[in-house]
Length: 195
Image (tube, rainbow, N blue to C red; front, side, top):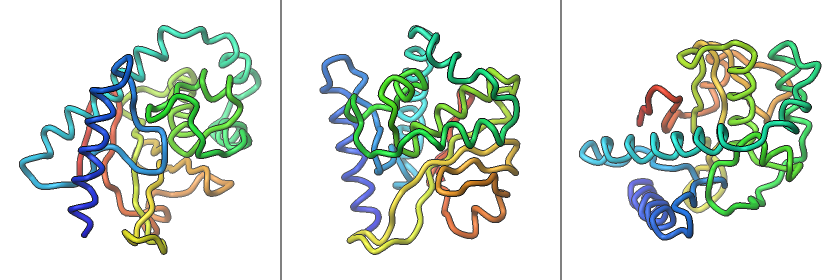
């Protein structure tokens, strides 16, 4: 059942990506981009996921950061960043359809979902001096009562040990988070890993 669901998700994402007006119709909701399928599809899924991330970087670097930088004034620690971003109202409503929003979008719309929070924290930590290899965005699954039996969520991991997760008010250990979640994929600017 999970394999069929994942295949349908990937087909829908690929269709949305290639048939959007600007080619940037990317994930922004509660269903993750390419998740584990079959071994022969992992390379294609990695390429697609890396394309999503590359497009995010292009948009982030081309958009005005005035509001975003103002938002970060006074944020000096990981805890302050986590609290400030998590206090933006949560909403599954995505103003740009199925794409990952930049931090500038999150501030402009004053609402976001788990991937929006995670992306904002990722870019903020880079501005705070964290290097690319220290940060990874993880798409995780967890049991729930839906038809598939799973729901999906995005978290940010620092150095493979600290987890920033909008579902919790504190920074958690990777060990604690993984007692609840299963990693489906992870990505940063350097690489995508499909589990």
